[in-house]
Amino acid sequence: MEGKARNSPALLFFSFTCVLLSLSTTTLSTSPQFQTLTVNPLPNKPTLSWADTEPESEPETQTLTDSTSSEASTTSLSVQLHHLDALSSDKTPQDLFNSRLARDASRVKSLTSLAAAVGSTNRTRARGPGFSSSVISGLAQGSGEYFTRLGVGTPARYVFMVLDTGSDVVWIQCAPCKKCYSQTDPVFDPTKSRSFANIPCGSPLCRRLDSPGCSTKKQICLYQVSYGDGSFTYGDFSTETLTFRGTRVGRVALGCGHDNEGLFIGAAGLLGLGRGRLSFPSQAGRRFSRKFSYCLVDRSASSKPSYMVFGDSAISRTARFTPLVSNPKLDTFYYVELLGISVGGTRVPGITASLFKLDSTGNGGVIIDSGTSVTRLTRPAYVALRDAFRVGASNLKRAPEFSLFDTCFDLSGKTEVKVPTVVLHFRGADVSLPASNYLIPVDNSGSFCFAFAGTMSGLSIIGNIQQQGFRVVYDLAASRVGFAPRGCA
Image (cartoon, rainbow, N blue to C red; front, top):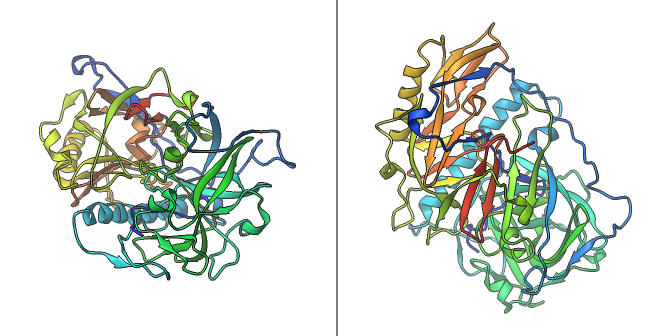
């Protein structure tokens, strides 16, 4: 089975670390040159609160019995998101930040490796029995930054699930375990669910897998998802009911993993939110009008929860949209056109659309990703952006480099500073970033760093730090992505 069906632990870690992108449609001639950055420390560990997410008894719900039915009426639902840091115990703010950067490096490596493998023949063999075809290594674990709690089966058993816009296949750990990693909740037992059903080998759903397997004894479909770090999940491909805060979605195709090995953390499984045919948005498309959005808050400046909305309610009237671009070699990622970047109200001369072009072989391009924290730009674009920002911020005291960040400042003793504005120019949408989306604290001593990084890969990634505070809208029906500034209210 091809690793295009990448996934992450059951903590529905919404591989979305969304960044507060403040959207602006003003012309460059009227764009401000500077804006104020409030100097906040590293955020403390977030606390978990799950209001109205896990009823004590079976709820009176609207049941969407068939996620593929064309006769279904549309609906909307909303779920609360929490950051992965909430599951970490006994870690200081500095420890949490360092861990986040380590996960980020792992995810970026996996995304770029997957994109690079699209046109190559470098494949790894699937490990599970019943698989005769090759598998592209997919995402490494640690790619989920956000998770939610949802019910699986009938009656619903509530578990943590990671959410990931960079993955397609939905999967969960299942009993009996050949090998399962440790998770927060009891492992899901499909024999105790009235709505669980295996998928036959020859069914259309089974054929949607990149490389399906088949159990010769039971004649049921098998799946496997492999990760770039060697982790994998393997088991039966099945259908099951998922419950989101009182709304049940029936017959969702998901992997019921009996052999899950590698560096997985705490969650029961993963909810794939990519563009592929087996992602949750694609499967439940008609139910939710093929639309969803999320809003990731800046935890250093707000106590409001992050959230995700499915359905027509996901669309924001204040959003500005840019068309999605298709990569015929890789249908999972959300590709967009980045035409240029402005610093201090002026276009950076060295940053042109040609640096971000997706070519006919599937290389290059720019993706929006919820699971990557720090935006990566192809190296020439990053160097031009960094140099322009250094000139605009020459009034600020410089500080030593930190981790992947090569442009840092000493803001100790200050409560606010003026910094150059940064605007991302997508086709049809200019996204003006709040200052806290590109100058971030890296310690509790007043060191702040420019939150972009260069990559030697051709793939550029818009990460969740840059998305904070925006409502990021995925309108698959119209093949577009939108950004609504101050959308987390």
